[in-house]
Length: 347
Image 1 (cartoon, rainbow, N blue to C red):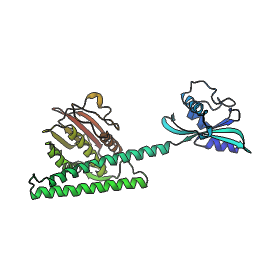
Image 2 (image 1 turned 180 degrees about the horizontal axis):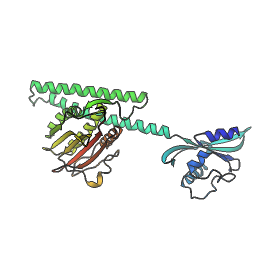
Image 3 (image 1 turned 90 degrees about the vertical axis):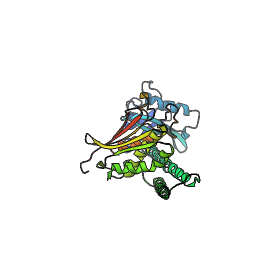
Image 4 (image 1 turned 120 degrees about the horizontal axis):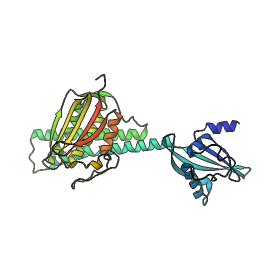
């Protein structure tokens, strides 16, 4: 009774098979994982049920494929839906012996969902930070090229602006590198980051300034329409990533001589940020998928993004702040990305 109570209290699925391969015991969580009744297998061979239970059939298939190998070396990973969400299990066979004589086998369905979730979250965050490294690197490269170009006569003020830009971007690179190092050593930070009172127009204006050199080299002009009264609570660094990725996306698809409009305003009580370009626009059939990771698209010969992460990063950060992002046609052609954050009471 004590052993049975212990087995039933485990969070992992456990099935005890006797020396003839019949089920001597199956705990409740194992039955739940495989989608069968707990008593349905007792006293029967494990693979004796019909194929009406797809998750049970998947486990049977794994065990069947393992027969040709040493069963005790079985370590298969399986994704199954339990209690309405996807879980990841490691399927293991543990031989039971008494005085070196085999007396049965223990089938264990070990729940590693939390570990896999943490791995995915860490990989996503590494991908996000690595993606964000590209923006300051591009700005640094362009600024350095302008300073090095002997054919270009720069005024003292222009040189000072470029030098300040290089210093600012180098500082951003250092901070991103420190973030990567911190994540590699410690627990994952929350997706929304810190929550401080911030000026949306100031954050957007700073990002526009970082892209100014690049836009000028592409003969694209910015048209900022930033209301300085727009405030919210959030992480200024993460919000700058949102604006940065939207502007970088707009630069990619805006033709030479085009423009990018960046707007901040209140709309129905929400803080609203918009980035509109004069590019070819996004086909309607792609609009549902463009915010998914690794989604890339080409429009009228314009190159796709390097990794397909930019808009997915935008969506993750915005939703972590309680907001939402969507895309619509821009008046006069092009695309308009709209981000809305709920206005908090203490702002």
